[in-house]
Length: 256
Ligand SMILES: O=C(O)[C@H](O)[C@@H](O)[C@H](O)[C@H](O)COP(=O)(O)O
Image 1 (cartoon, rainbow, N blue to C red):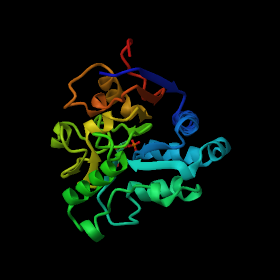
Image 2: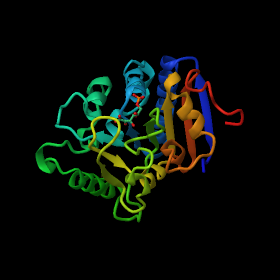
Image 3: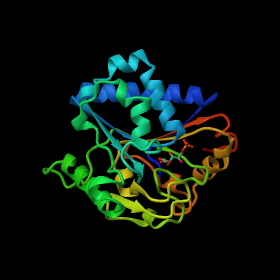
Image 4: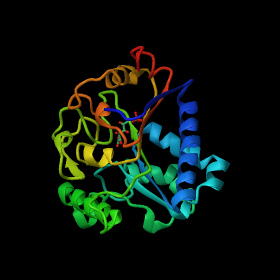
């Protein structure tokens, strides 16, 4: 189930981040030229942050993207206090968001674990689902806005966002955002978009670099069961792009 799947292999993780940043610059500026606005869903993790840092360092990205008309969402969040250095939100701000002239009203952070939803991941997830539905607009039955590009780092166990193999969040068919408990990657409590929300994106881009991802990538691209292999269950409406480095691509099946 992968409409328009492309697998793009780059020499190393820096080249991967640069190529993804260049393509994202084009994709977002084209969307803005066509519609006036664009939207991107960010991921946590090293490769997602490296992509953001590459965008921050790119004169072309700085110039071509109209940052004030870009909607920024998150695919998942580590349920930690506001400003915690391990929050995906904090890391994205450090890598890029503080350096570009975004409209704060268009930057949609997932709630932190303190403040309004103190310790209640379910309430926080519901609040984010409500924010997504509001952005989708009253004139549509869609429960999330039209994401142009949704980014996902791929974990060594094939997790994407905070959807871990065999976890109940993977079976969710109704809600667009859920709380996750007992995640194998710290911290144990997280918030995540569900598969229906991820699959509503126009394009899903998966990022994986390093030898420790080679088995996960090979498995995900060889048609496995989706409950065991979340990365294989993440695809976009019109395109699914895998950005790999040579090490992560080293065990790919010949036909991938
Ligand atoms: O909050 C997180 O940790 C993530 O969103 C997670 O899904 C991440 O993207 C992958 O674990 C890949 O992370 P790396 O790129 O660091 O390997």
